[in-house]
Image (cartoon, rainbow, N blue to C red):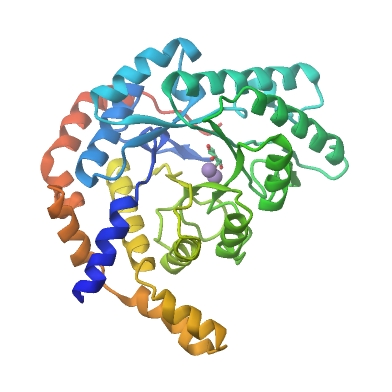
Length: 396
Ligand code: RM4
Ligand code: MN
Ligand code: MN
């Protein structure tokens, strides 16, 4: 690759950071069962330890997304311990994810629940989560709701929208000035008739009504098939409403496959819209890049390293688009030339440049290989095996 392009790759990698999820290291399953991994993390300490491995090998994952119910057994009381453990393993707490879907009282929803008591409990959990984020100096609180209904006529859709508006506004009031509320949408699952925040338009409307610190979170798996996600990204950028991403790939639904495993060109196109925006605006877009994946079959740490390196590759490729040429071609309605700007950038093999960048940072050139050679997996597998293998849950 020409040195001019290598320089562009270096510059892009300098700014690119991606957050990894604590739940990506734990034993999780499908609706039908779990296949247990001896090395899976059980405690928050083990999750930070694994995340610390990913960060020390890749150098680009300094923060870890945390789930309140799963990672803070004593709620606010766990904050000190969580902060200390993150520090011990060389990472920082990242976005805080309230859990408004697992407790029994959320059977018929959280903010959209017709029972005022359930809504009040959801609001309290939301405020606790914001306080937890405050205690950890985490900026983003990411809200995902399982709320919805399974059968036509069973839910008052407009009434539930109003409850969502109210509860989100109330939650927003609890934010400190430097915090953000991220509102995630999803068209279906676990509800299969309607979801209260089904798409990006609904998320924008709710975020706008909640307050100026509320933005939209785009989970790449939360769209109908063939939806143009990069257009959504472009619109959210233009409206200053794009807060962050949950990255994963999919083929059918919310499959949570590793990023770029099915359609790397789509991820490239998303990054292109962001970098093109930044080039035109002359400023960085304030976006939290996060991974939302939890692997059942692949080794968890390996899958995370694979995802992070793929994200770097696709981001670096997107940074190679020649914007001067692109704008010229777009304005001249030269369709083929414009399209080629993207295709040419995508066709570059950026891996040698990325290896060189890693070397310049004192990082292993091949983080996956370095991980395999480190012996970490074997060590934690032997430490954690007994506990993991006795935990087999069943589907029913
Ligand atoms: C949802 C969504 C949320 C995640 C939950 C567990 O599908 O992606 O972000 O926290 O799954
Ligand atoms: Mn998500
Ligand atoms: Mn999801």
